[in-house]
Image 1 (cartoon, rainbow, N blue to C red):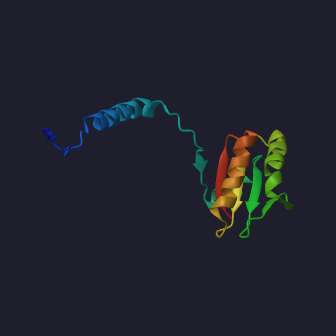
Image 2 (image 1 turned 180 degrees about the horizontal axis):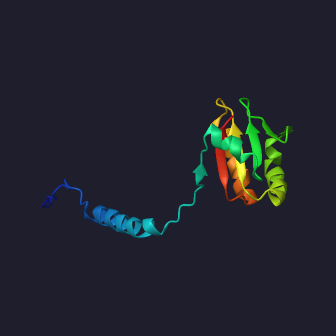
Image 3 (image 1 turned 180 degrees about the vertical axis):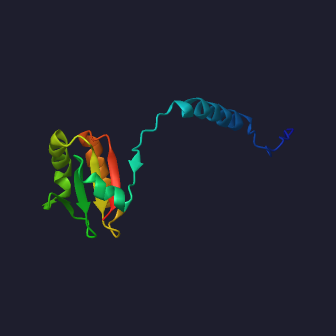
Length: 129
């Protein structure tokens, strides 16, 4: 009986792996320009501009340090932000002004922005209270 001597497999062929990565790279390069990234264009007014903006028909939502929302000196729950903004936007078409206190959380301000965007508000301004 003769024993067959087999060569051991010492190398890994990475050519198929490289081909897959190149195909994925080409697909991403083609698709990336087609992605439409929508965002909100924000205008941050200075304190002088905020005082002049009170004459316009803006919806003004105040965000306090503890994350509470007020509109026309009435406290609004986070769940009712959308409905409040949507109702107010029918009469005040100039947009939304978010007056946030300096220590307000980012998440509290973003909730107002999301509610405004979902309510159809096109113009959102942000000011420090």
